View 1 (cartoon, helix red, strand yellow):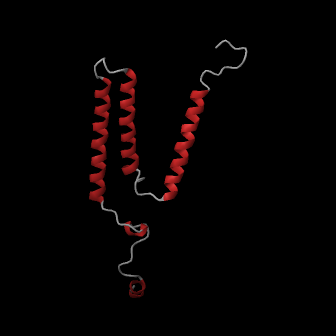
View 2 (cartoon, one colour):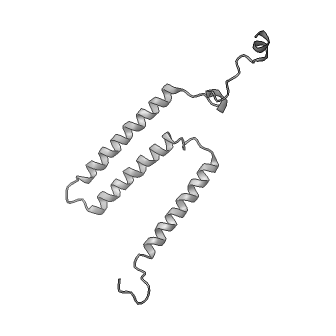
Length: 123
């Protein structure tokens, strides 16, 4: 038994422990961040519902645009903090940029071809 104790390193992190990834994890700080994100999601949802009940002199297109802006902010908060994309490296951002570019291209092509029917069809 004493030989086993002599061969183990004191102070070394265990495999799979919180220090093995190069950065310590503060559980209280993470729970606080999750609580802030949860509160912001609730506020954003309440804001989107409030926007939908605005008076009739606000156009439908303006209401939808405002709701989409709030939803994009909500998505940024969730993806940035809960999925840790704010602290990711350049490769992740490059992949995300390509994804956004090609998704926007596909949506643009879909809208461009919306009224493009084959010859001889009546709709």
